[in-house]
Image (cartoon, rainbow, N blue to C red):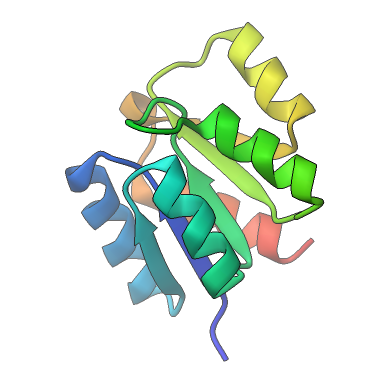
Length: 121
């Protein structure tokens, strides 16, 4: 059975790019376009890893991580964000993020490598 990846991001182009790369590599990929949808998808699909944006409509990534922490849900999270501010990275790590990617700076191959690294831990 293939590993499940949930992408929570409102950037359609990026989501399509990530989905294609991850599905080509044999992962089952699920999509949510904001934090509210993301929390529902987490409970429904129980993903092995989450790729999470920080700034989204309705509920952002930090709120999603706070909610997961409150509920005791521990799933590896890789932040995929436009920002790489140290204060944000620090907060994300405190909330349980395992890794961080800056959208303007990465290629899908790098995402795949980080996903595989987290899944194989």
